[in-house]
Amino acid sequence: MVNFGVTMFPTDKAINPMVLAQEAEARGFESIWFPEHSHIPTSRVTPWGGNPKAPPLPEEYWRTYDQFVALGMAAAVTKTIKVGTGITLVAQRDPIWMAKEVATVDALSGGRLLFGIGYGWNKEELAHHGVRYTDRRAVLREKILAMKEIWTNDEAEFHGEHVDFSSSWSWPKPANKPHPPIILGGSAGPKTMADIVEFCDGFMPISGRYDIAEQITQIRQMATDAGRDPATIEFGQFGTPAKPEVVEQMIEVGLTRILFSLPPAESDKVLPLLDRYAELAGQFA
Image (cartoon, rainbow, N blue to C red):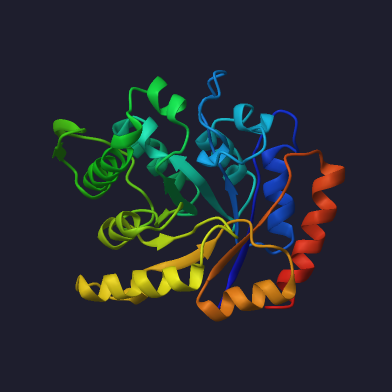
């Protein structure tokens, strides 16, 4: 079975995220996802996505609402649709506060949070948070492992190179047990695949950048080699082109979640697209 969802940059110039969540739920979508950036340094040294050939960075990157606040409000006005971070820039966030934010949204929504995570591509943004670009993978790993300790233990502690705290209490605990699904986005080279197998529940890259079928095969094999059941890892895709033949192909290679992209625009532009995406998803129900 494949689940369909939508993703959009929630900004002050776009449809209200609460309205969007209600409209998406009314059309039967499984999930709604919001990305995040704390800010974008005006120096703009790092090209968009790290690609030197990329066009100028669109302004929605520096106009996003706070991710967890927006998702919490979206969850508050809906009943069934899942709310996803698509993605959270884990390396740039404090892990103790982040564990509480994730657990709070998940607990108050009745277990509807999907925790999408990523390493981050903007070197200047990372630097403003005190994180070296070359350290971001190791920092993310430790923060995720530390948050798992907080979510699953009444008294939690963690001692690593980048995260270090003594025995502590922290509530709420997530409604999802042992925690919300952790889904890694980004380019799946050997290091990323190793992280997926070690501490993630899924992999969800952006459409068109990589051979997703080959990556699924490799990740499943790495899981098997590590003694993990590959069936415990789910696969999805951000920004799948809204074409029946593409969707069918993605389902055939093993995707169980497909997300269509919405522009950060007002209702008159977003809702007709939402209707079209819902109609397409209905063909695969």
